[in-house]
Length: 400
Image 1 (spheres, rainbow, N blue to C red):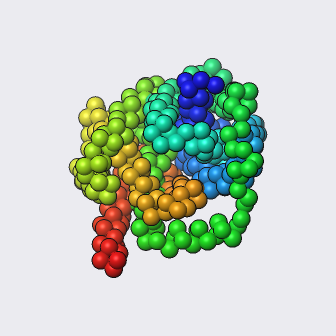
Image 2: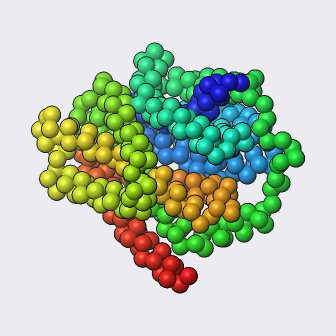
Image 3: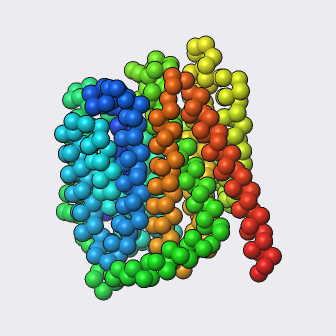
């Protein structure tokens, strides 16, 4: 396998998550009308149920692949994903759909998490960083095109066609991997599952105050993003009457916000992770407060819509300036158990974010106020947690 082919394959595995979430956005109204017409406000749970399953799977996929090999866990994860997508395709109730989406998220975590381990198996140091950077650049483009792809599929095959697309996507990716990528973790390098060691690592991770606080802030930052993803389709469709152009606006916003990662890479060395996160959350508080106090989203057309698009772009941009930095802060003191810590931090923050965002997704009342108010509360709590983290770290430094 050439370097180019390898990068393309890993990018496809990464893209499973983004495609499974963002391609669903245009389908939510039709699913709600058919499966839950009396409680249409519950349709956004289709997104967070997938995220919940993904978070749970994130915790177990990495350790399982260390014990049983990379290919086996990818195959098992893909099989779960495909079976769950088939159940979702045949669902006759929203409840069954939500169960299927949890299992689908669980399955998707296999290719997504294990692909990171595959890169680590084959590359190290700067080469690993280079490969990962290229993969992430490709991965960042998926949210920009996924809703548009979803809308085309729905136009041709209805909302159930989305799940057929998920099945075909998974079959193509796992077949490509099965035919072209050999096992990257030899039997002699595998580590048996030892629950006593895993439990000890868990206790150590949550005993560290910096790790605990950064996980909480990361959960809040992710929850803000999930809240926007859950409600953005309803906002565009019902408030601003932009149903036909929604995929294009969403794609443009995603592309603009994608530059945040490049900006973060350029300035984090100068200003530091903690300051960037704190300042970004402070800016979000100011933006959200302005949106609420002056009811900018309720202005006459096109000004209200423009205000919301700017707000949406800034929120997506915030993710690029906070999530990576918060993950790095959590990992700083955990270098000796980095693999386990990475799984725990990712899993806990994702599950917490889904739990926080799910109730917000059902608060839609025909205005953007519940969404903006929820984001304001989360940004405020996150800001004060970052201030508290600074004081905690100062006390730890003085004690040492």
